[in-house]
Length: 113
Length: 113
Image (cartoon, rainbow over the protein chains, first blue to last red):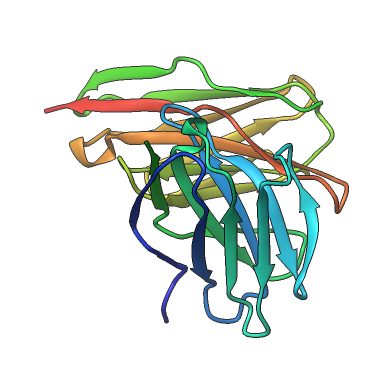
Protein backbone atom coordinates (compact mmCIF):
# COMPACT_ATOMS: atom_id res chain seq x y z
CA UNK A 1 0.00 0.00 0.00
CA UNK A 2 1.69 3.16 -1.20
CA UNK A 3 1.71 6.01 1.21
CA UNK A 4 1.54 9.67 0.26
CA UNK A 5 3.84 10.48 -2.64
CA UNK A 6 5.05 13.87 -3.81
CA UNK A 7 6.91 15.06 -6.87
CA UNK A 8 9.39 16.41 -7.56
CA UNK A 9 11.61 15.90 -4.50
CA UNK A 10 13.67 19.01 -5.15
CA UNK A 11 13.16 22.07 -7.33
CA UNK A 12 15.14 25.22 -8.07
CA UNK A 13 13.39 28.24 -9.55
CA UNK A 14 14.13 31.93 -9.98
CA UNK A 15 12.11 34.87 -8.72
CA UNK A 16 9.00 35.58 -10.76
CA UNK A 17 8.67 32.07 -12.12
CA UNK A 18 5.76 29.72 -11.54
CA UNK A 19 5.92 26.24 -10.02
CA UNK A 20 3.60 23.22 -9.79
CA UNK A 21 3.98 20.58 -7.10
CA UNK A 22 2.12 17.28 -7.15
CA UNK A 23 0.74 14.95 -4.51
CA UNK A 24 -0.87 11.52 -4.58
CA UNK A 25 -2.75 10.64 -1.40
CA UNK A 26 -2.58 7.40 0.51
CA UNK A 27 -4.83 4.72 -0.95
CA UNK A 28 -8.41 5.18 0.30
CA UNK A 29 -7.95 8.82 1.32
CA UNK A 30 -10.02 11.56 -0.27
CA UNK A 31 -8.74 14.73 1.38
CA UNK A 32 -5.48 16.49 0.67
CA UNK A 33 -3.93 19.32 2.69
CA UNK A 34 -0.88 21.34 1.77
CA UNK A 35 1.62 22.88 4.19
CA UNK A 36 4.64 25.15 3.87
CA UNK A 37 7.52 24.55 6.27
CA UNK A 38 10.27 27.12 6.45
CA UNK A 39 13.62 26.08 7.88
CA UNK A 40 13.45 25.67 11.66
CA UNK A 41 9.70 26.25 11.79
CA UNK A 42 6.64 24.08 12.07
CA UNK A 43 4.47 23.48 9.01
CA UNK A 44 1.95 26.20 8.16
CA UNK A 45 -1.39 25.25 6.65
CA UNK A 46 -1.90 26.51 3.08
CA UNK A 47 -5.20 24.91 2.07
CA UNK A 48 -7.25 21.73 2.00
CA UNK A 49 -9.00 20.04 -0.90
CA UNK A 50 -11.98 17.73 -0.59
CA UNK A 51 -14.34 16.63 -3.35
CA UNK A 52 -12.27 18.65 -5.84
CA UNK A 53 -12.94 21.93 -4.03
CA UNK A 54 -10.85 24.13 -1.76
CA UNK A 55 -12.51 23.76 1.65
CA UNK A 56 -10.19 25.64 3.98
CA UNK A 57 -7.43 28.14 3.48
CA UNK A 58 -4.66 29.48 5.67
CA UNK A 59 -3.10 32.94 5.55
CA UNK A 60 -1.49 32.65 2.14
CA UNK A 61 -1.87 35.05 -0.80
CA UNK A 62 -3.73 34.26 -3.98
CA UNK A 63 -0.41 33.43 -5.64
CA UNK A 64 -0.91 30.05 -3.99
CA UNK A 65 -3.58 28.01 -5.72
CA UNK A 66 -4.42 24.37 -6.05
CA UNK A 67 -6.46 21.72 -7.68
CA UNK A 68 -7.76 18.28 -6.83
CA UNK A 69 -8.47 15.70 -9.50
CA UNK A 70 -11.20 13.03 -9.57
CA UNK A 71 -8.63 10.42 -8.47
CA UNK A 72 -8.01 12.60 -5.34
CA UNK A 73 -4.48 13.59 -6.36
CA UNK A 74 -3.68 17.26 -6.00
CA UNK A 75 -1.48 20.03 -7.32
CA UNK A 76 -0.14 23.13 -5.61
CA UNK A 77 0.66 26.06 -7.89
CA UNK A 78 2.66 29.09 -6.85
CA UNK A 79 2.89 32.08 -9.19
CA UNK A 80 5.32 35.01 -9.19
CA UNK A 81 7.75 33.23 -6.90
CA UNK A 82 9.48 35.22 -4.17
CA UNK A 83 12.69 34.38 -2.32
CA UNK A 84 10.56 33.85 0.78
CA UNK A 85 8.70 31.01 -0.92
CA UNK A 86 11.77 28.82 -0.44
CA UNK A 87 10.63 26.04 1.87
CA UNK A 88 9.69 22.39 2.23
CA UNK A 89 6.18 21.87 0.87
CA UNK A 90 4.35 19.02 2.54
CA UNK A 91 1.25 17.24 1.39
CA UNK A 92 -0.92 15.32 3.84
CA UNK A 93 -3.86 13.07 3.13
CA UNK A 94 -6.72 11.92 5.30
CA UNK A 95 -10.14 10.36 5.05
CA UNK A 96 -12.81 13.04 5.25
CA UNK A 97 -12.48 16.65 6.30
CA UNK A 98 -12.23 16.04 10.03
CA UNK A 99 -8.57 15.12 9.63
CA UNK A 100 -8.51 12.59 12.40
CA UNK A 101 -5.09 11.40 11.38
CA UNK A 102 -3.09 12.92 8.60
CA UNK A 103 -0.45 11.00 6.71
CA UNK A 104 2.35 13.14 5.35
CA UNK A 105 4.41 12.76 2.22
CA UNK A 106 8.19 13.26 2.10
CA UNK A 107 7.81 16.81 0.82
CA UNK A 108 9.16 18.88 -2.06
CA UNK A 109 12.11 21.13 -1.28
CA UNK A 110 11.72 24.38 -3.26
CA UNK A 111 14.60 26.83 -3.57
CA UNK A 112 13.91 30.23 -5.14
CA UNK A 113 16.99 32.13 -6.31
CA UNK B 1 -6.25 32.66 17.74
CA UNK B 2 -4.60 29.38 18.64
CA UNK B 3 -0.86 29.47 19.26
CA UNK B 4 1.29 26.42 19.92
CA UNK B 5 4.66 26.70 21.64
CA UNK B 6 7.34 24.09 22.15
CA UNK B 7 10.15 24.69 24.61
CA UNK B 8 13.04 24.05 24.46
CA UNK B 9 13.81 24.48 20.78
CA UNK B 10 16.67 22.02 21.10
CA UNK B 11 17.66 19.35 23.60
CA UNK B 12 20.69 17.06 23.87
CA UNK B 13 20.78 14.14 26.31
CA UNK B 14 22.95 11.02 26.72
CA UNK B 15 21.66 7.67 25.54
CA UNK B 16 19.51 5.76 28.01
CA UNK B 17 17.98 8.77 29.72
CA UNK B 18 14.25 9.28 30.07
CA UNK B 19 13.12 12.66 28.78
CA UNK B 20 10.10 14.90 28.46
CA UNK B 21 9.21 17.23 25.60
CA UNK B 22 6.73 20.02 26.22
CA UNK B 23 3.95 21.56 24.15
CA UNK B 24 1.65 24.38 25.23
CA UNK B 25 -1.37 25.86 23.49
CA UNK B 26 -3.37 29.01 24.15
CA UNK B 27 -6.94 27.88 23.36
CA UNK B 28 -8.06 24.87 25.38
CA UNK B 29 -11.02 24.16 23.07
CA UNK B 30 -9.19 21.57 21.04
CA UNK B 31 -10.54 18.53 19.20
CA UNK B 32 -7.30 16.59 19.33
CA UNK B 33 -3.56 16.94 19.74
CA UNK B 34 -1.00 15.02 17.75
CA UNK B 35 2.73 14.43 18.16
CA UNK B 36 4.88 13.99 15.06
CA UNK B 37 8.47 13.08 14.39
CA UNK B 38 10.44 14.65 11.55
CA UNK B 39 13.86 13.50 10.39
CA UNK B 40 16.06 16.13 8.67
CA UNK B 41 14.64 17.14 5.29
CA UNK B 42 11.89 14.55 5.50
CA UNK B 43 8.14 14.47 5.95
CA UNK B 44 6.29 13.97 9.21
CA UNK B 45 5.54 10.67 10.90
CA UNK B 46 2.60 10.57 13.29
CA UNK B 47 3.57 9.18 16.70
CA UNK B 48 0.53 9.61 18.90
CA UNK B 49 -2.89 11.26 18.63
CA UNK B 50 -4.83 12.22 21.76
CA UNK B 51 -8.52 13.04 21.50
CA UNK B 52 -9.81 15.87 23.66
CA UNK B 53 -11.61 13.40 25.91
CA UNK B 54 -8.43 11.43 26.60
CA UNK B 55 -5.68 12.11 29.13
CA UNK B 56 -2.88 10.08 27.58
CA UNK B 57 -1.80 7.70 24.85
CA UNK B 58 1.04 5.20 24.82
CA UNK B 59 3.00 3.53 22.06
CA UNK B 60 6.05 1.50 22.97
CA UNK B 61 8.56 3.75 24.74
CA UNK B 62 6.45 6.85 24.05
CA UNK B 63 3.75 8.28 26.28
CA UNK B 64 1.85 11.47 25.53
CA UNK B 65 -0.31 13.26 28.07
CA UNK B 66 -2.88 16.01 27.62
CA UNK B 67 -4.09 18.57 30.14
CA UNK B 68 -6.58 20.78 28.34
CA UNK B 69 -7.33 22.98 31.34
CA UNK B 70 -3.72 24.09 31.59
CA UNK B 71 -3.16 24.05 27.82
CA UNK B 72 -0.29 21.57 28.00
CA UNK B 73 0.84 18.28 26.55
CA UNK B 74 4.00 16.31 27.23
CA UNK B 75 5.73 13.58 25.25
CA UNK B 76 7.68 11.21 27.46
CA UNK B 77 10.40 9.10 25.84
CA UNK B 78 11.75 6.25 27.94
CA UNK B 79 15.25 4.82 27.64
CA UNK B 80 16.27 7.13 24.82
CA UNK B 81 18.32 5.77 21.89
CA UNK B 82 20.44 7.50 19.22
CA UNK B 83 17.73 6.57 16.69
CA UNK B 84 15.32 8.83 18.57
CA UNK B 85 17.29 11.85 17.36
CA UNK B 86 14.89 13.95 15.29
CA UNK B 87 12.63 16.99 15.54
CA UNK B 88 9.41 16.43 17.46
CA UNK B 89 6.39 18.54 16.59
CA UNK B 90 3.04 18.87 18.29
CA UNK B 91 -0.10 20.00 16.48
CA UNK B 92 -3.58 20.87 17.69
CA UNK B 93 -6.92 20.97 15.93
CA UNK B 94 -9.97 22.90 17.11
CA UNK B 95 -13.55 21.66 17.23
CA UNK B 96 -14.93 23.50 14.25
CA UNK B 97 -14.90 21.60 10.97
CA UNK B 98 -13.24 24.71 9.60
CA UNK B 99 -10.46 24.52 12.18
CA UNK B 100 -7.00 24.22 10.80
CA UNK B 101 -4.24 22.13 12.32
CA UNK B 102 -1.77 24.43 14.08
CA UNK B 103 1.79 23.23 14.59
CA UNK B 104 4.42 24.24 17.08
CA UNK B 105 7.95 24.99 15.88
CA UNK B 106 9.26 21.72 17.25
CA UNK B 107 11.97 20.52 19.61
CA UNK B 108 15.15 19.25 17.96
CA UNK B 109 16.28 16.25 20.00
CA UNK B 110 19.79 14.83 19.90
CA UNK B 111 20.66 11.61 21.76
CA UNK B 112 24.39 11.28 22.43
CA UNK B 113 25.78 7.70 22.26
